[in-house]
Length: 97
Image (cartoon, rainbow, N blue to C red; front, side, top):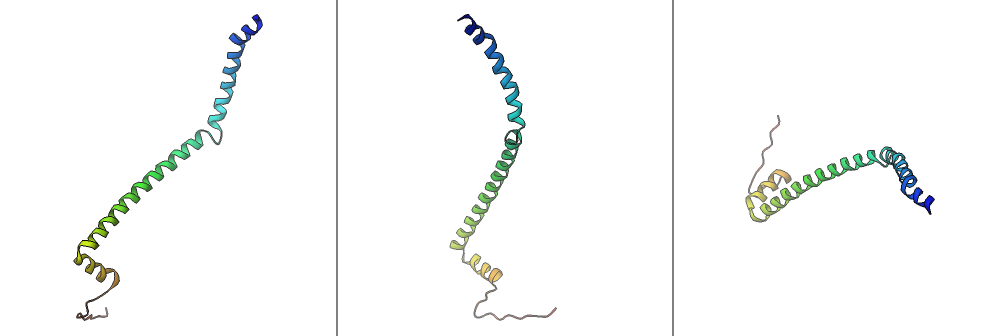
């Protein structure tokens, strides 16, 4: 029993410490270690920036939809500027430059 107690009290902690001293650097410097963690953090930051950008775009589009629903002048301006539409009573003159 005394040899088991000696092993449990002195030798086992040394083996665990030695194993940790070898395993921790291997895990940190392996391809799935610290480098992977850094890459994942950068990817998460890019994803958060994209989410922020898309959220702003969604809000802009919602505001535009609201204007289209409520402002006939905005609809007319969009039809003229983006689609090139005219009223039936209008005449277009085109000049060469």
